[in-house]
Image (cartoon, rainbow, N blue to C red; front, side):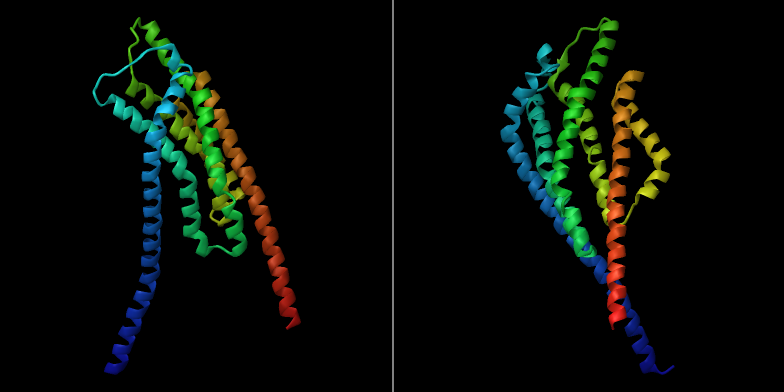
Amino acid sequence: MKAGDKVRENSDKGLLREDGLMPLLEHLGEFRKRLIYILIVLTLGLVLGLVAAQPLYNYLMSLEPANTMTLHTFSLWDGIGMYMKIALVIALVITLPFTAYQLWAFVKPALRPIEQRSTLKYVPFALIMFLAGLAFAYFVVFPLAFNFTRTVAAHLNLEETYGIIQYFTFMFSILIPISLLFELPLVIMFLTAIRIVNPLRLRKMRRLAYFIMAIIGVTITPPDFISDILVIIPLVLLYEFSVFLSGIVFRKQREADAKWEEEEDSAAAQT
């Protein structure tokens, strides 16, 4: 092999490496940009959350079980910590739909126009499903867990003295995971729309999904059978609802693909 040919071959290999590296760097740069946008909105949401923390705190304290007891502070930082926890939840509610939009914008170039339009519709529902999860967690799961812990304390003849930070930490450790789980149908629909999962695969994973749902239900509820069942059943139904929605999206995809193939065959026959 001549020296010039060898240099040209090495140059071509270098170009191939650069061509393979550039798309990766571009994707990482795009992901970094989207992440910065999300962090900016999260910061603004924290500011708004601090403003709205007091009204929300007053509302939560007017509801059961908070209005049935006296909360205490055990540290000078407890009041600030309470404000920050509530502000973080408010910021999460504000940031969630924006995060869903940024995720859609990140994968948009890889989607066909019809897929771009169909997946964009899911963004507003991210907030709706999160709020539905908050309502279910607060009015169903949280009272079960809270009453169970108080019952155990009563059986042990313990004097109840609850700190405000402990109360809100206990509350949000239940509310946030369940609220995020309520995003499962949208996540499944989105992944189906971009052809990562399909209902056939989800049905094959049903046993594993049920097992994971059972672990989650047992983890976030008191250790009694009734509470576990009251949480596990809605989670399982949520998964089955996700599979059903995935089937609808998948069926529409196949119909669109069949129509596109017919148009392509018709155009090829005319030429």
